[in-house]
Image 1 (cartoon, helix red, strand yellow):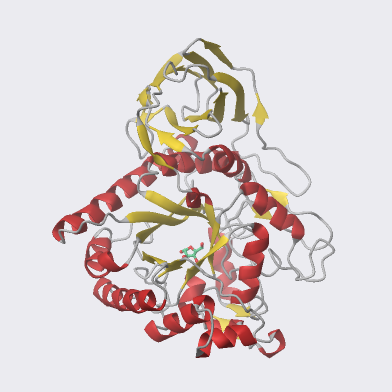
Image 2: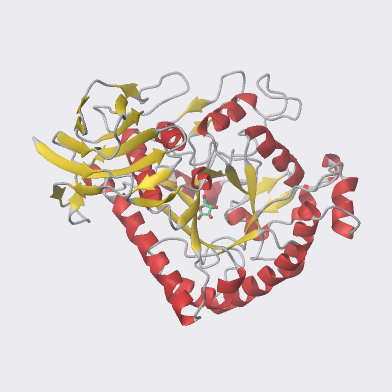
Length: 503
Ligand code: AHR
């Protein structure tokens, strides 16, 4: 049998996890807001029209921050349309997703929903078709206590206390030609710098995110980061990263290696930030906000046709990927990668949360919301991945795939929750054919004992969950033993594993 070793030592610490890496995203896109979090009249909804069953699932996921309102949507968003008496709000043509926006849910409603779901709002501003003044007005509306035009407007809308929104994204994917109001790197760098300076005068406590590249393949990457950060470096707190992964070639082994691409992307952005830091002789270190990541490819073709032929309508079903077992493995792997970089990736958003490339799906009528396959690795990593990330010394066999070389069979990370005295090993066997024996040396954690080994495993890579049937869900197995400071586990081919120890 193939073997991998890891030595886990309490002294080898990467960083304390910022819980905001378990963030997510709700965009005014498809059925995410209307039909997703908001379904007035449904027996499962509360007095504000919010689906209670959805809120319960979001709470289970312990999502601490939710990005809003886009995404591509934000680049033509007129925020003033989304506040004030609902009956007076205009219906607008929404250009990014070619839909009708009714503005029944806006800034104040979403803030209310987030509070119910136990999350903070990460607000994105429109730097596509709008600019500095509109961003300042929105910030004044949301965060200023009162006594000014926009803060008093909020109060007149029935919201006395400011929302105190801490994190603000300076636009969305401004490097992308598909973005409304797409900018060159010089144009964006200047606009973002000036907007950041003005916003920090209004509220010096906010944290700002400068737009990075839309994915690793963008032709302007990493020059986009180098040039835009020349302008924004001293005025912002994070640079954003976005990337979606897919398996269009139907090659599981290669798909399981895409977390190495995420790793490369993160390392390159860190290097670019540090280059700008060195160039500026700055004392400040910039961190990363990976605020859009997921698997996204199942719905692409259908959506392309749909976008061309569909009449203007409210909440069309868009980006409704139905996730299978191997997608769940990849989401688990991507979360391992984010944790491994916990020293620099301080925020991340699974894009998205409900109905649109989402772990949670809703139907109309009385049927409860249901969990896609990707719900589970997110749930368990969010639950047990809080604490201090350790840097294990790992030895693993490697293999090559169609587009990746030296892919380790074992991909893993370890989180030590010092308060709860728990260690969690997250481990994926990326070898699709053979078992892997994992031997972990935990001598530095005297008194810690294995309490459970939970797996996601399924013989069918294409198995999916539905509203009525859960084919993919975690289960406990008896495949781990402990002899003093040595923990031995069997990791079945193409499985996600969570091995937990407690004192
Ligand atoms: O999450 C779906 C879309 O993906 C977002 O609107 C956009 O930012 C990205 O391209």
